[in-house]
Image: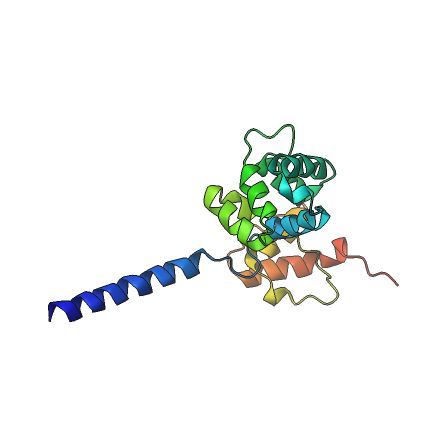
Length: 176
């Protein structure tokens, strides 16, 4: 009896560990900036470069000098810029030397610093084809913020959509 209880307990622990390991994997679209940067940078590395961690770190610093926008912000977080306060380049140089994929590197970086995975590229919205009802409230607020407009009294998603529709003629020009 005690042995069967032990087997059940062991099976439960294994199942729990499996579920926890699944939750640590990146979800679709998560860490998009990190994954793209790691993939693009990895593609620039030659086989000889991958043998030396310090060389990878120096090449990443050089790559970061040309980075703009969210890519530049990621470089700042990782320590690839001169003005970076801290640096965790060792956390990318070793995995890159092992040819680890960008998404796996970013999974590890997420454990060190969550804000790395909070970076997202801004969506370019085509107002001619977009269905505002399918956008998240966060995106609707961003549209209004980009236009320097307020939505006083907006509570529901429909309120934000109504306000954007009111302001569309002012900010979205129809090109012939």
